[in-house]
Image 1 (cartoon, rainbow, N blue to C red):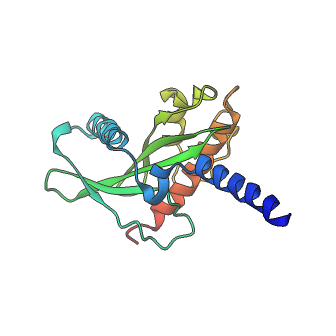
Image 2 (image 1 turned 90 degrees about the vertical axis):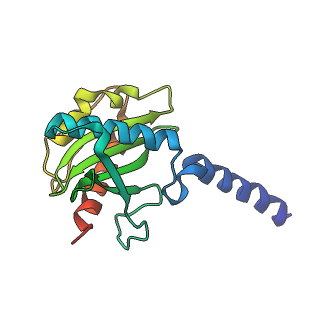
Length: 184
C-alpha cells in the first residue's frame, strides 16, 4: 500500500518542479527569440545612453560554472562590447516566478557594474503584468547596485502584481550581488 501512495507523491513533486522550472530554463538556456529580444533591447538602451550604432553590439558568453551562492540555473550572462573594442558591460538574462508562471527578464550593467536597464522580455501570466511597465522598471536603474532593494520602499508596490513585483525585486537583488562578483 505504501508504494501506491509514494508514486502519486513522486509524480506530484515532479509536476511541481517542471511547472516551476520549464525545461528551457535549466542551464540558463533560453529560446533564440528571447536572446534576440534581449540583445535588441540592450543595443537600443546602450546606444541611447552612450551613442554609437546598434549594429556593433558584440556578446561574449560568460562561463556558467560560476561558483557563487548568487548564481542560479536560469541565469545566462554575457559580456558585451561595441565591435572589436574592450568590453563595455554585462547583459544578464534570467527569470522570476509570478503567482503561477515564470517570466523572463534582462538586466544591462555597465562595466563598472552600474545597473543601466531592466526589461521584462516574456510575461506569461494573465495577472501581474504591471511589472512590464518601463516607468516602474526604470526605478531600479536609479538605485546603486550595492543597495539591498526593498519592494514597497525603494521601488513602489504595484497593486495586482505583488507576487511578480516582489519576485523580480528579489531576483534583481540576487543578480546585483552576482554581477559584483564577476571579474573580481
